[in-house]
Image 1 (cartoon, rainbow, N blue to C red):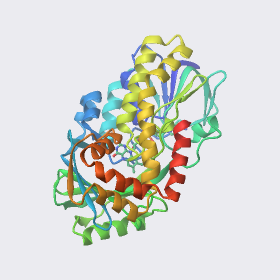
Image 2: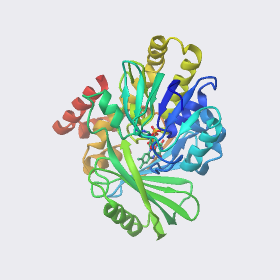
Image 3: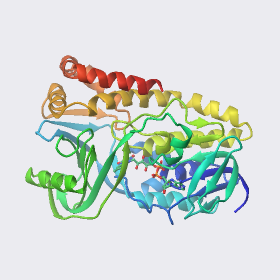
Image 4: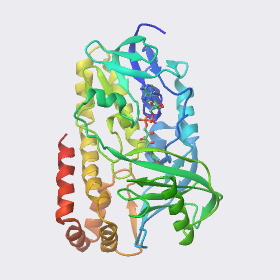
Length: 395
Ligand SMILES: Cc1cc2nc3c(=O)[nH]c(=O)nc-3n(C[C@H](O)[C@H](O)[C@H](O)COP(=O)(O)OP(=O)(O)OC[C@H]3O[C@@H](n4cnc5c(N)ncnc54)[C@H](O)[C@@H]3O)c2cc1C
């Protein structure tokens, strides 16, 4: 290990590996990962749009385990809307995906596993490792994930609660249609977020919940509920896994001095679902391309990065506003929203990544439903959430 690198990366999760896949190999790069290998901590469901396959190519394509043509959104009480995405949606084998990304770059850059970064220095950019060693870099990329240990050291006034906990398990079992996954809104099992049922193939299904105060017991009860309703048939349950699902949009800027954050560390997610893989790909590719072109001028490259990601941030912030209001609705209110759209209706040509477009589709196709939706959403409690959402929007 050297004393100085062009670029130091904290963490070797999907955001870091994606960024490295777009970075030119002539840079001296050191990556520090606290786990002993790639993909040791399993947390993600792995659902992505066709765009991820297009941007990332082989590593993503090789990792596809199932493809969906439909998505069912329902409430625990039975209100339902069928969504037909304009392009198929995929579920990836997340561990394989990470390994494929890693194989592409392991000979180009230096990887140090079992090395935890304890802190980052910003004035003279450096990291301090758990063995006390200090390593310097021209640029430090913090890709520590949703844990935000280092992020909080840097942004002291950061929002404390940016997400909810998500827990899931792979079961031997099946759903009615292997090409459809289901999202369930529920106050009993997934308050403040939702539950999901994702068939992996004809014989396996991934079932999970995210929300406030959830536990393994809640997940087990959710599975019993789904079985009783005939939504899924489960023969054998697997081991639980999970992590923090973020539902807060990124800030207008992710860098401080020569330190830049990417991935969950930078809140690069779609706030309505917590999906990070597509958003990381966009930010990671952009940052790498700008560094490839203008590494010498760090100030310029960060301002260029900010400028070129502005539109994306704006879209995610709009989604963040929707997320803040929608996830805080009571189950009854969510049910009313779905019923306003129309019970058991199909909404076609939905963009899986840009959720704000779904609202636009609904407004254009069912203009009358928007009045009912506004009527439901604009209660005093929900206006408070909207105001909070606007505060987050401005940050
Ligand atoms: C339950 C659940 C379901 C999800 N489902 C989906 C989905 O279906 N689709 C989707 O797109 N997204 C999904 N997500 C979100 C997605 O998993 C994340 O956005 C993505 O994994 C974040 O990638 P990352 O590289 O930023 O962080 P991580 O994948 O968490 O990687 C961070 C890495 O940094 C390492 N690290 C942390 N701190 C240090 C340190 N101090 N020193 C050294 N190493 C460190 C960690 O060990 C880890 O390897 C889900 C998340 C959860 C929790």
